[in-house]
Length: 194
Image (cartoon, rainbow, N blue to C red; front, side):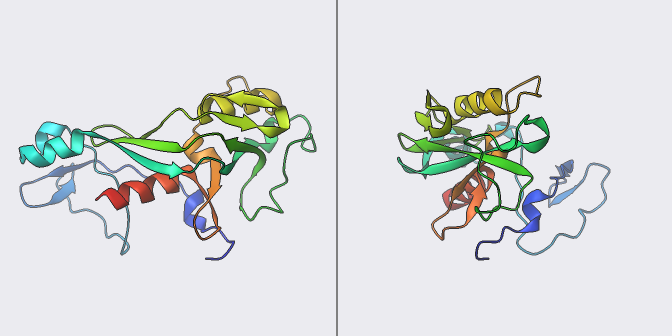
């Protein structure tokens, strides 16, 4: 894939309601699932008590920590160009030099500790607190979520709310040197647990 990012990253996710009919999954109305591409990845969301094997249910509902990024890693927080007053403001890296195909401008953040993904089978994965430094603002944050909020407050001055999904708006380099968002890191980490 080189420095290019696949187009699939920018496509919307589709939620399809399904039910288990005793032998397989069907749509809620009983029709079969649509044909899916080979190697499609999805998440199955269900109540823990639906899993009949008690040992497996316990292992899926227990919390696990997975190392996502190491201390000293640099991440880029994406800020919306339409919410920025000055797209040439100091600290905003243009998306050109960094091989990320995105509508965002980027602000660099350095992790001051390891970043862990906390995974519980019955909940969505969450990021642990991780002290980090926003170099351009000369500010410290206790977590990536707080760092994103501080960055948004400083640069996205046209926004009313300064929260955002860091899984979608924060990018890091993988072991091959390619940039990907934390949601892709999250899915890969969960896949390795299986």
